[in-house]
Length: 329
Image (cartoon, rainbow, N blue to C red; front, side, top):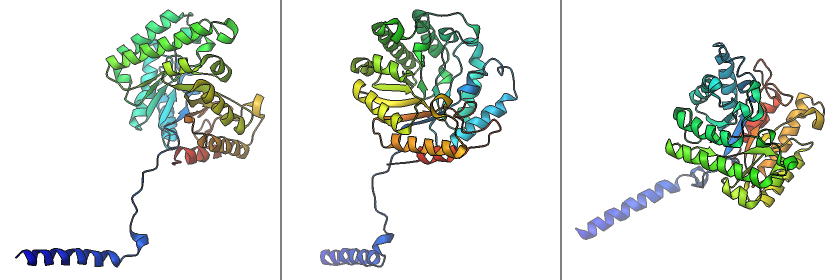
């Protein structure tokens, strides 16, 4: 009986081998490591509509159609996040929720890039200091747990140098500015832990020259190892080169918090074709720069660098962004 079993096993193995040999090698799928997107954060900014129109459209129910069109268009590019600039003040909370709810409808993560209006005195709000900003940040997170979802990004103070006590390049309070960013990062993380949400805090976007001054290795490490620059330049080559410099000086990874073209003072006027070519070159360079882990194109609609017109019609640059947002390596 033992010999019969061995013979049967041999015949089964032989049969399988014969079947496999009947197929050409090219038809057998090779198992390889799955490719990953070039950037873990692929975002497009909506600030011209999500912030600038926050008061004007706060009570307009029909504006939901505009929000949905913009979110849907951004989703179709392959973006992981939609950057929303709505202020965090109570007045604008209903408007912010409308944007966030639409993002969730299209299964998108949100990069919260708003601020408290008093920091830069938006919409006539009275100026607030750093202590008040920290208190407001913690309160905002704790009181609005349903606003957030795992995988979101929360920036409590984008381009912090534009408000509060001022630009550290002019005030000279570099040490205090660094401490404030670290405090903001820590209080945000603590609040998200309390509401059991895995949201990436920090991502403090800033002017490139401010980043060079402020983001030393100690500070960068203390805010999560990420440096975010809002950076507009004349050439695509300069964009990636500057990102490499910041990564080297800070010891961190880099995210482009804002970039785009044309900016008239830097790029002059561009045709639709010229814009697409510029963006293509820029994104190619950035995709070849391993220090860059995320990008947020500025802006979807409303600025000189827009890639959709006010009617929702895409420009040629949309296909360029789609190509790179779906690129893997």
